[in-house]
Image 1: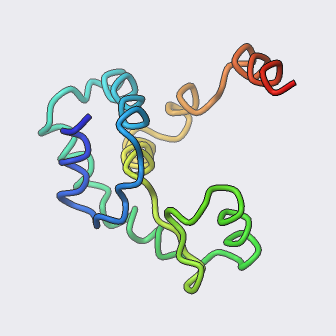
Image 2 (image 1 turned 90 degrees about the horizontal axis):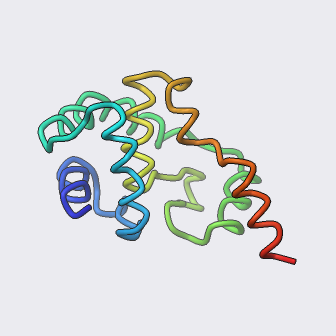
Image 3 (image 1 turned 180 degrees about the vertical axis):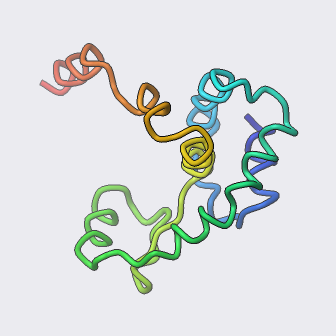
Length: 125
């Protein structure tokens, strides 16, 4: 986990570091599913897609979307004045993997199983 954080932050600004270690630990099975098991492989993946990620971060959002993100997730990763946002460490890694392997191959990692959704709904009632 500390290794993932170190690799990503060596290429990106410190403001991207607002995830916890538990959140970063979720990346390990995803990376290993695509045979990214070494620091060098992760570094090369992140380096290959750096410009595309930075370009995506500079994209301006509508003001309503900015305010919705601010209301839903707090102030981390949002620039209210410029109407832009930046990805956390996990977002940078996952979007790099989407660029590398395709969005469709990453879908199983994005989708939440129905059983988990039902458990969450029961816990809230």
